[in-house]
Structures are given as C-alpha cells and as structure tokens.
Image (cartoon, rainbow, N blue to C red; front, side, top):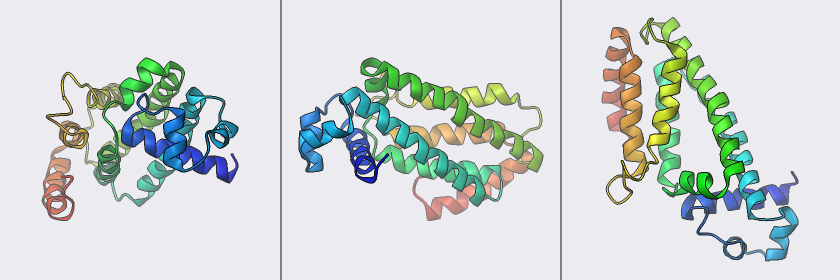
Length: 209
C-alpha cells in the first residue's frame, strides 16, 4: 500500500474508533480528513472496502505491538499487564458500537476480525499460558485451549450493551475487571503473590489498575 493511501486508511481507522462505523458516511470521512471524496475513492471503491482495509491495517499493527510487548515482558503476568495497559488505552478511544456495527453492517469484515481473534489472539494467549505454567506463575492443571477460548469470549462480552450499557460502564472499566478475573483465575500461589505485589505497584504508577 502506497504511503498516501496508508495514511488515509489510518485516518479513517481513527475516525471509526472515535465515532463508530455506521454513523460516518464517505462524505463525513472525506471532510474530517480534509480531502476530496474523489481522493478517497481513489483509495477504495466503497465504504465496505474502506472498513476491510482499515481492519487489516489495524490487525497488522496489533500483531507487531503484541510481539513487541512479548519481547519486553519479564514473565507471563507482566506480559498480560502490558497487554492490558495497551488495550485499556485503545478502549478509551473506542466507540462502544464498533463491534456491533461490524457484525450487523459489515459481515465480511466481521468474519475477518473473528478469524484474527480465533487464530492470532488466541494463539498469543495460549503461548502466554504455556509460558506462565513453565515459569511457575500459572497453575499447571490449566486446560490451555479452553482457558484461551474463555479469554476470547470474555473480550466479546465487554461490548455487550445489554450487560454493560455505555451510560453506566466504560469499556475500559469492564475490561480491567475482566483481565483481573482472568489473571487471578489462572495464577498459581506464586503467581498470586507476584500479582499482589504487581497490583500494589501498578496502582501507584498507572490508573488503569
């Protein structure tokens, strides 16, 4: 993808995150980006293609960031904290209707997103669980595929507006509780002690926890 086209896709992604997908027309997107609609249509044929390209670009960036966080982590619990901080930052900028808009109005893009979660994200969680067990921070009796699947399913629930309406709960607030629930559920006694120390430190350093 040429640089100008990639920049347009990145700007569109940021706008979708802020305002939701359905609420923005191609005219709206062009106006927000300060370009003509003709220029926008030189990059994509229609809004559906724009949504798909935005999602693919986001996934490429997400994969690179997850790999960076893995390399920066001292252990499995630290990695989950780094992931939580990153996801928390993203959720603060994310419109609560994003997932609903994808599923209802852009089924092709939604299938791409679901495939990404079930392969890339689940693979990342399964690897984290294996490493946590090897390090002694996670229980050694975990059923890794099931626990990873529960993690993925729990992430979907965050966006459920019936369970967690946006006027009562922020996405970040729900996510923080979900990640605490996950880590405490998989941690060994050694992991729980490390988690307590980690939470005491992070509470003073980062308000997400």
